[in-house]
Length: 117
View 1 (cartoon, rainbow, N blue to C red):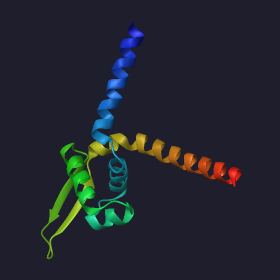
View 2 (view 1 turned 90 degrees about the vertical axis):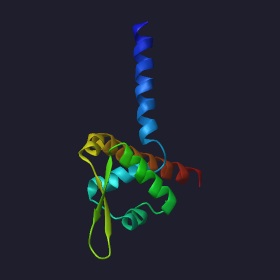
View 3 (view 1 turned 30 degrees about the vertical axis):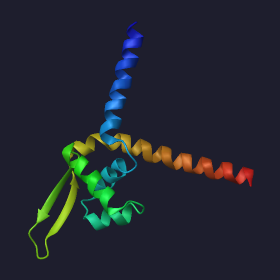
């Protein structure tokens, strides 16, 4: 019974994490911002296929969950910069593992495609 309860608790923790970080863009946005603070347009260039509405929505949700902070600089013209919070650093190991796995998976798929061609 204990094993079943541990499995249930673990599944719930994973669900909680995916609820906050789920979607196509959130982890990529956090990764980009942990590398360097960026303006909205810079993020759009890095995340090539994201539209402005989706980027704005994802940034707002990340801000609500304290992964991102939006800083308004009173320059002329006004400049807005998004930065990863210290809390985002708690994901550094996860992001590194996902990046490495993604590279391996991409290579595996390329090799599979070569075999079938």
